[in-house]
Length: 193
Image (cartoon, rainbow, N blue to C red; front, side, top):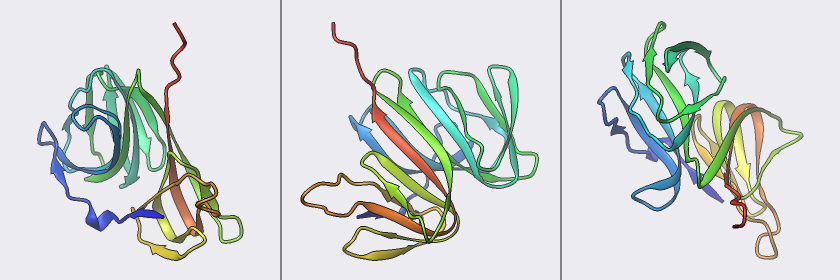
C-alpha cells in the first residue's frame, strides 16, 4: 500500500512565482511527463503558466472561492468543484476570499486522460481504489487498508491504488467519515493505423 503523506511533499515555486506546488505523483518521461498530480498553494492573484498540449483539471480544496478567467471567460469556483480546461489557455486567477489551495491533474492529451470526482467516505462501505487511481483525503478522518495493515490518514494525504491479483489478495480501501477526491488516470487508446 502506497501512502504519500502531504507533510512529505516539498513545495516548489511556480515558473511565474505566483504560488507553490507540491507534486504528488507523475507518470511517463521525467522530462515531459504524460501526467502529473499535484497540490498548489495560491498566495496571490495572477496568471497561470501556459502548458500547451496538456489538459488541466483544477479543483479548489481549501479556501472559500477562486475566480479563474480562462480565455476571457470568468468561472467562479467553490470548493470541491473541478474545472477542466486546455493547458495552453490564457488563465488568470483572482482570490476574493484570500489565499487558497487547489488539487491539479495535468495530462498530455495524446498520452493520457484523467478524471476527478469527490466521494463521501463511509465506514460501512469503503472506497476501493484500482490501479491508476489515487485518493486524496479532503476533509474528515479516514484510514487506508490493504488486507495486511491499516494506516490513519491526515488531511491531504494521498493513497495510491494497486493492481490486485494472486500476489495481492486485497485491494486498497479507504474508510472513515469525510470526503476524498478520487483521481483516475488512464492511458489514451490510440486507433490502429
